[in-house]
Image 1: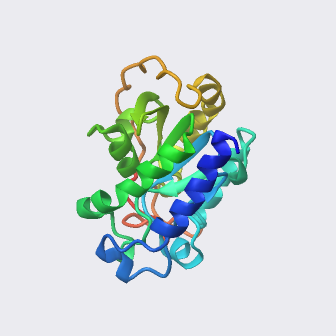
Image 2 (image 1 turned 90 degrees about the vertical axis):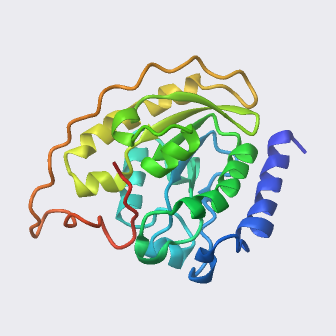
Length: 241
């Protein structure tokens, strides 16, 4: 058995024996099921969101709502599909009312994400939104400051490249954000091609983050506009900016 095949088998076992039955925090008491992750268990490209929403909790699959559809469209724009990547969240269980993850919940759940990264060994990790970006970068900078700027990191001894992106739901909340997301996604193939292979040396230090991007305020809600301010949609998390 090859090293990659062995890691896939170990990741499958970890998902089954550890993540799917986890009761580390009180979120386990209200969940329908654990949202472990989905996609290729040997993928070189990993996406990390924030937490499951209503539909994710019901189906056990991350990003199945409106922002999940947009994620699929953005991937198609760079010649990929959901089957080509692995998608997970910081939290594996849905917070009540789709509220933001709490620090204690992140602390209890982060070992699962770190173990997924250590076994998957992706060349490139795209974080979607503030919570995933701050957790994996270990830095306090918000997504509006660091999006589109790669950062070499090391998780569990594995060198990889972190690439922060706005959460797709941000483009549903603020429609002008879509062009920013498309531009940031367009860099993924080049970053993936140049990222370190499994266990290789860390890539060169990334350039300093650019100043925050000015974002136009959302237009008033109408029959054709996106969801009103305050909540993007019933199955998505905030913490987008």
